[in-house]
Amino acid sequence: MGSSEFSLFQQSPKKRSVFHKAPSLIADGFLFVGGASMALSLVWALLTFINPSTSIDNIITWSTGGCGPDLGSDPSEPTFYDDPNLSYAFGEEPMKDWDLKRREWLKLHPSFAASEEKVLLVTGSQPNVCKNPVGDHLQLRLFKNKVDYCRIHGHEIFYNNVLLNQKGTGFWAKYPLLRASMLAHPEAEWIWWVDSDAILTDMEFKLPLERYKDHNLVVHGWWNMLYEEKSWTSLNAGVLLIRNCQWSMDLMERWTSMGPQNPDHEKWGKAQKSLIKDKAYPGSDDQSALIYLLIKEKDRWADRIYLESEYNLHGYWLGIVDGLDKISKGYMEIDREVDLLRRRHAEKMSLFYGAMREKHMKDRGFWKENVRRPFVTHFTGCEPCSGEHNSMYTWEACWNGMQKALNFADNQVLSRFGFVHPDLLNSSLVSPLPFDFPA
Image (cartoon, rainbow, N blue to C red):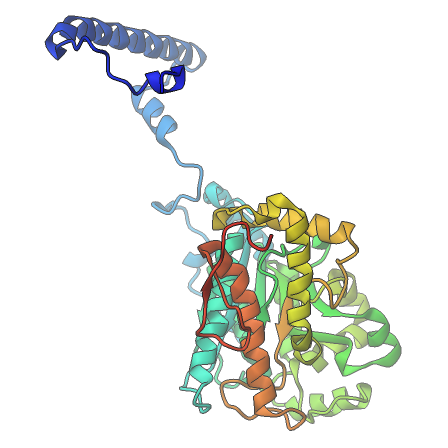
């Protein structure tokens, strides 16, 4: 107890009154104020020498300015928002010169400077109460999953539950929303549509946006299946990244011209069916329409479209859910071997540890399908809101699959809060994580 480390916390046997210290404290105070005044005078002299118009107000404003977006002012100069002819909807005036209009807005709002990293996730559901008794509960959990991912990665999110075009129902409901989102968020470089029944099942995975720098639309798919087989499953339009630019506006105008708001809607369904032999749905759907455009108007669109197949931007749930427990064990094996991956950390640090974990997974040869976490698990055909699932599956299979996928993703979030679902089929049960888990 007599060591020097403890002496700092021991009281001196000779206690001095605070009054005896007063003269010393006053002298120290004068020295501090004098030094600070001299430093400020030197800064002032230097700034006025460089710029004679500098005022003390400039210095105060400059020194207290934030580094994030300026949400407290909007310049009075007119922008595209002040154009009375601006329409947020399809079928009226097509958008022209959007790149210029967006660039001018960003010039007036430099704190929102465009960046490849700025993503707005857009999702939604029907306006009415779900027919399925557990449908609204599932919609809430599906939305929470997307909110969790966006919070971790710093993305914005918008959830919509109204039809912006009364004719644009079903497959087509998202396109009026995508256009309106581009106008409402000129600061966003990418609009990321995710179907409500798609679950983000790798909360640490970061979208490789740099890979898409020369492209404007990203969907999951394979070029050989598209051009050689002309298959309906050659791509999936339920999860997509679309750049906020004029090219995308033009594509969506052309794309939605095959939708139900067009009087020739039935004609387009027949044209798609004649081209895409495995198309089951008789009417015109958005996925078939995109395949049709890529085949029939390849020169106009294909160069700017990226078909992603290196990771699960869309993963078919039936081939994923039964393997989630095994995937969890693979990640736990890596965490047991690497001490730093077991370190408790703030949720804000998740991406740092996620990148570290990814490197170790790759080094061990675990970075491949059915061993790594699927990025998106898409419950196509389950229809959680209506309950009118595809006859290929039972509702029990859909329900259990969604529970497993949601809890698998939730465990990656809850672990930062010190808890985990020990059983992926039991959503209500959580257990505290012991220190240094899973050593």
